[in-house]
Structure formats: structure tokens, C-alpha cells
Length: 195
Image 1: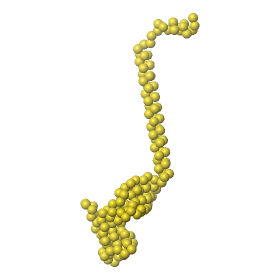
Image 2 (image 1 turned 30 degrees about the horizontal axis):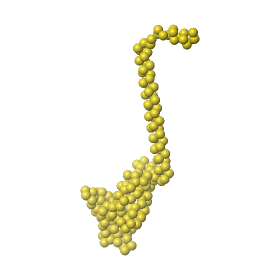
Image 3 (image 1 turned 180 degrees about the vertical axis):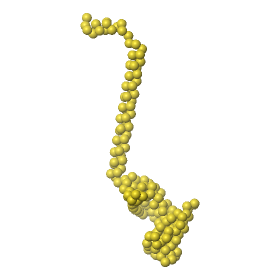
């Protein structure tokens, strides 16, 4: 008789208690849960890795691009805007005559403590919805805000013009200095000697 057969014969009369069987079953469940958790963690890790590779690729390309509708000279235009992540942006659009146009800009914001930070995408989009002034070759001066086109050529007095723009419930008060900038405020006209 071999050792193996001797052990079998010696322990054949010994039965595990119910408590021991329960512990074995519990360990099997824990092991299955561990395997499932490991698989889930591996899948999540792969997804995070692929997402970071995609984000890194997008950053290498130059930023995040979006297609937006933008009002350019009173006309609603589809445009592609690219936020570069450093507070700057670039826009490419096709105007109503079929010409491709480009715009770019950006900047920094100064916090209350004096520190600087790049402007956010929300701040850029807010700036893009502000009125704009155009000085045409024929000498006329136009203000554009959404679908509004206002000729302000004859409204200048001493090089300053005040324009009230209304769109629904929103009102903007605009002060324009001839070829020297403009200011927009929601409650009152800005004083031209402030800039």
C-alpha cells in the first residue's frame, strides 16, 4: 500500500464540518469577485489609457475644434473654432459670398490677487457674442451685433458716438470713439475719457 492510499484510508472517515464548507464557499465567492474586480479595473485602465492617448493626440494637433454658429457682420455663419488651451483661439468660416475667412484672438485675465491666467473657453465665447465695429473703405462706420447692422457714420459728435442696442430683453450701451476703440456696458454708456 502506498502512502497516498494510506492517507486516503486514514482520512476517509473524517468529514468537514458545515462551518468549514461555508468558509470554502465564501472563499470561492471572494476569489470570483476579485477576478471580476481585476477584469473591471483592467478594462477601466485601458479606457483611461486610450482616452489619454486621444487627448494627447488632440493636443498635438493644436487644440480642440468645435463647429459653432457665429454672427459675422450681421449674418449667421457656420464656423470652426479651435481653442488652443493657452487662452487663444482660431476661427475659420465661409462668408455669405463663399469666401473663406479667418479670425484669431485670445488673451489673459487678471485675478483679484494680481495673478494672470489664460481666458477660458466660456470667456472667449462671451467675447465673440459682443458687438463689433467696422470702418469701411467708403468712410462709413457700422456696428454689428447678432443680426443687427447699424450705420453710425453720422452719429459721431467730437469723435464719440453712443449706440443703444436691444435684442429681446437684453440691452447694451455702446460708446464708440472714432478709430480709437469702443466700450460696451449692460447698464450705462461708458465715459470716453476712461480709456
